[in-house]
Structures are given as C-alpha cells and as structure tokens.
Amino acid sequence: SSADSVTVHFINRDGERLTTTAKEGESLLEVVVNQNLAIDGFGACEGTLACSTCHLIFEKDAFQKLDAISDEEMDMLDLAYGLTETSRLGCQVRIKKLMDGLTVQVPVEVSDIRSQLEVGKQS
Ligand code: FES
Image (cartoon, rainbow, N blue to C red; front, side, top):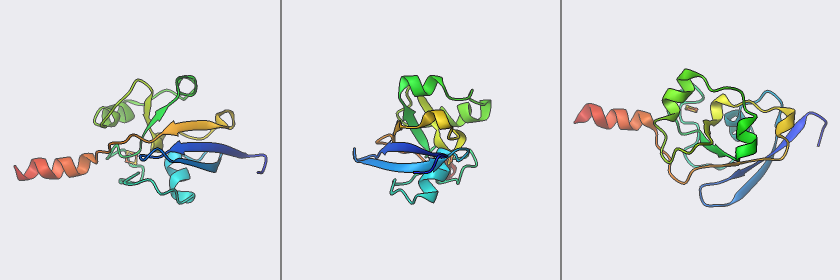
C-alpha cells in the first residue's frame, strides 16, 4: 500500500467484513463507490444529504476524532433507522491519515427518506 492510502474496514449488513483502501480526502461514500463495495442500498442520493442510506456506526474512539457534524447532516441523520450515539452519514465524513485501520459498521436496517416521502404523498 502506498504512503497516502488508509485501510478501512466496513462490517456489512450481513456481518461480512469488507477491507479496502481509501485515499485521504475521500468521503466514506466515495470509498464505497470507488472501491465497488457491495453494500446494499448505500448512498442512494449520491452524497447530496437527501437520503440517510449512507448511515454508518463508528467505534467510540474514532467517532470522537471526527470533524464536527453540520446542522444539515444532523437533520438527515435523525431520520436514519437504528441511530446510535456514534452514528454519522458516510457521505459527510472524509478520510484522514489518522483513520488508518478504521472499522465502521453498516447498520442492518436502511431507510431511504425519499421513498418514505413518496409514500407520505400518496396517503
Ligand atoms: Fe444520501 Fe449520504 S448518500 S445522505
């Protein structure tokens, strides 16, 4: 692995561990897309803060080192299923060198807020 690559592990919805390399500055959504990781329904809005399907759960230590959350991310995160105290949206978290060896959990359940809104419109 080259000097600027960071190893990241995703624990997939089915419990399988996907180990990949990321570059500094990529978002976790970009890592999933660029590395073609088979994570069901992930990143449906392509990082435009409109879906919450990129919900990821961090380990406490790693979570505390992340950049502060924006109000926009907080609002969308609130709509994610299975929200935890160490949840963030993967499209908003950028890879840093110090994250080398990071493990993130993909929640078992996924909600695409856009489909919920569609359902809401019909009723
Ligand atoms: Fe939709 Fe992150 S990909 S909010």
